[in-house]
Every structure is written in structure tokens, then in C-alpha cells.
Image 1 (tube, rainbow, N blue to C red):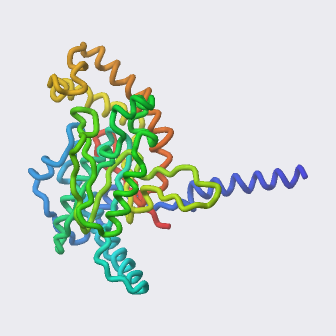
Image 2 (tube, one colour):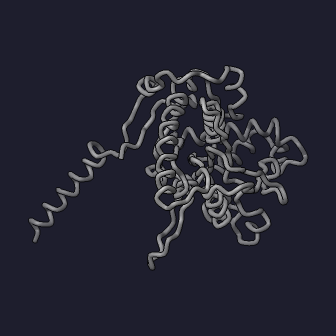
Length: 331
């Protein structure tokens, strides 16, 4: 018995080691290696346009668009073409001819990692493919429960966590989009007011490509023991991207953005965060670090980071917000 247990333990250790090395589901590229995969994909954005797409604290250079995003655009073109062929084959098999099925891309990652900037750059590049597809972008922030509901449920300190989202509404939205329905509405979130805007929506009308950006878009939940079909948000994705960075960098970027917003948006008396413009720099720095540690870091560790292995592509950033490594799922 003892000998058998030891052998099994040794085998488990070998398997674990193999999973970390030989059996990794990803093929990893440096920026230079990845850039070679651009092939003849043309550069369709100007330096000025790239500058307009970057976020407050998430810079992106035209060089990174050329080395990282153009090869990714080329890859997505291949994926989209193959996926469309599969959908058409299925429709032919079923005898249905009810129009196109949008290609949906999910973009996930922590607060302050630069999801919005990446999503905007992708949207512009994909919209400039030769076929000029219609590309829409939706953030899942709009599917957060309103503050009034979160306060009533004691969830304000969990805002951004999976339980703070109206998951059924988000799933219905994606289901309608995937079914090719016309004029599907998504709620709008205001970072200025820190709340969902009642009565305000954006209409998505049968796009060729839809980018869905959010913290927890790759999140799963406990599977029902009775075997019922329970869809996840990511079930509607044809391709998914996770933007990654070390915790220390994410904290620094979050605090830097918070401090910069004190000098801009927070100064407006109508802003939800106006109170933070009236405290000292030391107090603001301490507040930003507390919010990061007590809320965003917990959400990252418990909910967001565990979804990273579910992504088709992982973009890893260095201290300069530059993507230095690309991991593409091979299985």
C-alpha cells in the first residue's frame, strides 16, 4: 500500500510538471516573434487616430499597433471567416436561412489594465478590414445592477464582482445578438455618475463583429448538479482575449489614474467622486490604495485572474503598459 501511494504521488508530480512545461495549452511569443505574423496586413490607423483611442492612463503607441494589434487583426480575420463557414454549414444542415450570425469577441482583465483601450483599437482595426464589416463595442458595465439595488442588497462594496451584474439580462442580450435579432438594446453605464443611466441605452443592430469588454466576461459559476443547461457569458464568444499584468503594476496604474482623475473629472461637483477632489494628496493616495486592496484586488484574485486560462489569447503587459508577451491557445 505504502509503495503504491508513493508511486502515485511521484506520477502526480510528473504530470503537474508536464502541465507546466510540455503540455501547456498556449504557444508563447515575444513581441518581435508575434510581429512577424502581421504578414502583409496593412496599417490603417494614423498616429493621431491611435492617440485618440488610448485611455487616460493606458497609453498605446503606433508601434504596438503594428507589432501586436495588426497580427491579432489578421488572426481574427481567419477566425471570423472559419466561424462564419461553420455557422453557414449548420444553417444548411438545419435548412435555415435566417441571416448572418455575428462574430463575438470577449475582452477580459483587471481594473486599470487597459481593456477599454485594447477594445477600441481592435474595433477600429476590424472595421477597416477590406470587407468593411460593421463592428460594435459594448461594455458589461451597463449590466451592473443600479446603485439603488446594490445598496439594498448590501453589494456596493462588491461592485464589479460577478454577483453585482444582472446576469440574466446580459445573457438575454447576447442570446438575441447571436440569434441575429434587430435593434437589440444594451443599458449604458456612466463612470461620471458611477451608476447605470436609467432610460439610456445603446442599440446594437446585427453587427458583423461585436466586442464585449468587461471584468468578468470569462467567469463561470458552479454547475448545476441536475445537469441543466446553464449558459455562461463566454458561451457566446467566438474568440476571447485576456489582458494580463502583475498585481503591483495594476495597483500602481489604478492609483495613478485615481490621482489624475482628482485633477480632472472629480473636480466637477456633479461627479460621484467629487468628494475625493477636496481631500489632500496624501489622503487621496491612501484612499486609492485602500479601494484597490479591499475591493479591486480581492475581485482580481477571487474572480478575474482564475478566468485567465479560459482565454484564447493572453496579452501580457510590462511596466510601460507595453504588451511584451503574447500567448495563443493551441488546443
